[in-house]
Image 1: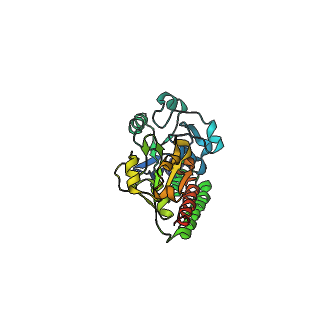
Image 2: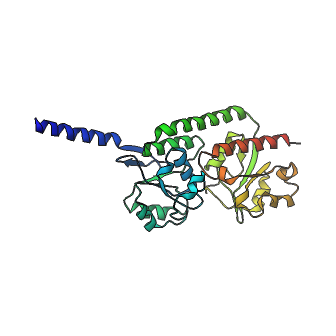
Image 3: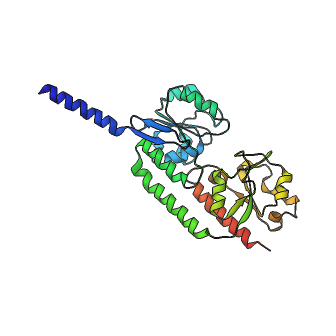
Length: 291
């Protein structure tokens, strides 16, 4: 009898442990498995911090990189470094059970260093606007916060559907997206910003370039003669105003030099859908300026 009760208890414990285990695929297509929901999470990118909070896991974020400044509570999270360099000793001291990282040009070495600690790593890099609510739900599954995340994801999907319906069939606007002006950086067709432009009927004039964030020449922009130019305020020295010295450009002639909030558009987090709505409005403005 006692042996039977003991066996039942062991089976129950095994079943409960299995019930709490969770496996999801990250944005690189790799499986990430946790024995139980993550309670101590480190964010290695500002957009990741925003996703974790939106997924209902803000109180579980114990470390974050510089510029993780949204929502307001994120500013109080201990810093573990930057996008380019993290402090491994600080990470170990925080005893995380999940690392959420962003795979970009200079991150491979630091991500490999974190993996060597034996910590689970989820790579976050949504490539489309639809990928944002999906990423939010996958992170929620890893933290066991699905109940809080589902309505947020549903609202984001509803906003996207409304934008697609509203701007479907609009005439195309050839656009240049200026990430930085010294040197002159832009984004190619695989970047999520191009997906946001596409949503509104915008066409990225450098969509075919193989590098995700290429440096382009001033002459190449002039040659492609975009109808609209977008620049982000916090990451440009001269901003879009540098183009005003070229009055024959279509974007300049039609007064289509737009400054947008890079925090909304350069971060693949929940606020990017609001940023896409602003892009759509500006592209419509460019259409009205046609002569």
